[in-house]
Amino acid sequence: MTDRSVPRGIDWGHIALLVILAGIAIWYLHDTWSASSRVRNLILVLPASILALGLAAGIAGGVIIRGLQGRADPAVEGAESATTSVRERIYPLILMAIFALYILSLPVTGFDVGSVLFIMIALLADGERRPVFLIVYPVVFAAICTLLFGWLLPYPMTTLIL
Image 1 (tube, rainbow, N blue to C red):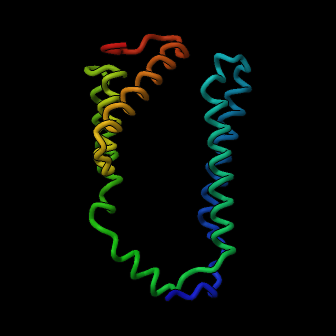
Image 2 (image 1 turned 180 degrees about the vertical axis):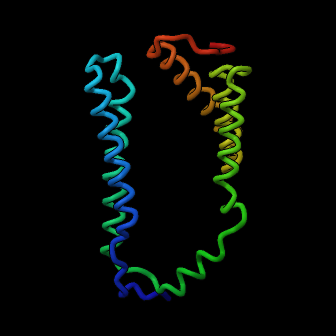
Image 3 (image 1 turned 30 degrees about the vertical axis):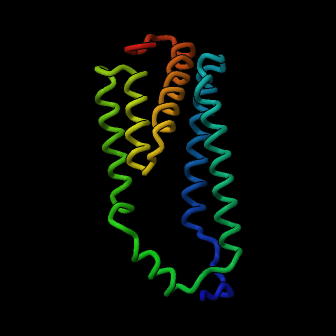
């Protein structure tokens, strides 16, 4: 049984990192806006900045709330973290390798087919095994992204099907 009466305290390291990332997002948006306030210049930067700031605020709120709540016994937490599997430790490396292969294969596979393959392989690596979800989700998501990027971007993309 864990004792939740031990105060956790706010993780100021995470908060500092979030403030730095939010500051970078604000600086980049300001720099882009000052260069040109035309819609064509802000079409990707403004929504991405708003999303980044919203996510940073949400994560900061979660860190603060968790910090104000109690925390489990440090000995129990240490035992739980020591039992992480090897798969959990190398999973980020696997995803980075899959993403690198995706980027390198784009000139050959095109954005549409490459995106379908990347999403499908990433879902398999994450443990997804439902065939309908492994086929339908990547195809629909890649088709929507390819069509939207083709409409938004002023230069042509390499595609095989769309």
